[in-house]
Image (cartoon, rainbow, N blue to C red; front, side):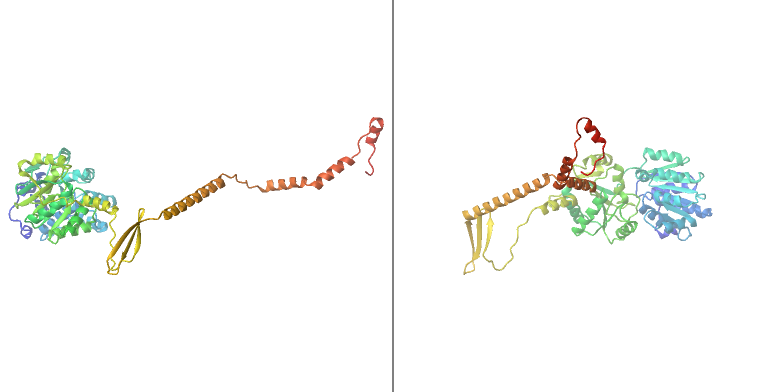
Length: 506
């Protein structure tokens, strides 16, 4: 019943080859381009096997590189397992941590998680993985690119070794092959057009300098017959700037990238899916795995840095045997990234020139920002908005302009030389001003150079006071008088006798 609910009538090639092998309990290595129905290739057999052998606790763990892909997988599990009572939970960043913790404690049938958030939960909770029978690594090459390999290995180490493992990826780099050999047992390898673009996608490339790219996007959207469009940007900042620029052009656009909150990302993606916002500007977070129906056009505003990223971006359109258009705007700086793409895709990628009417007036957001800054530095002429003009002198270098009106209301402009006396007076004033400034500077310098008196301590003050007392004239006179009145010793014997006789009186 679940298959009927979501409109599954015939399996895709990857589903047709994978599902029978998975139902037999074999490990699956599925290599197929994006948009070929890989999600159904593992969700359908997992639900079927859980229903055949019901047990307690969590039975399946599905790891995904992005929040959006994890939510999409969970939505498909809900749709397919709604009538069977299969329960699931998403463990992703940006959402309520405690609610996710409660889901892990409850032991839902299937956990869909991003590696980072699941590791965070494992640090807090003793997550019970003992009943895990199925492990799925979806978009495994993307998880490798995003640096999740250590987290993935840590999680796998906590799982039972006796399990059924399925790994799905659009490309198979060497590091992924090494991981495959360590976690899988004699996997059945299923390949469906690995690392190639779909034949249903009309691929075009235009040589466009940065200043013409915004105008090119506007003109292409005017000319093409489309219902929804994804514009890919290389950076988060560029995504925001491009969204604002498109809105200024009157194009209803949204955006999505890694720095947005989960609530904003979900709302933006939902608005794009239901057609409320027909254009969405995104980084490569939207390039893989996300199932969006009827994407008519994708535009690579910035050339992807890797061939695999180009293939994934093109896979957003032309899905499920529908036709689509993939356009790439190539500047001189982009050429080094575009050449490997052209070599890989070959003649399926047509090189075209922009129409002549895409002129240099159409600027990229970055170019416009630079020009606005430079324009602010230029002074604009002052506009006079008065009904009457009064006589008013205006100085222009060494001349005076007198503007007045005559009796008939006509404006009279007179240009006169400044008087010599006036110029001399100004020169004298300037000279006098210079003299004053010079005098002031000299006074300040002299004041700085003048030796400062050292502050005396109390001890030094007391000592100085004593010396002053000794230097007083009356004290000096008394000391002199005392010296003069002192008896002088006599000579000879009599002098010796007098020295031993006590003094009486003076």
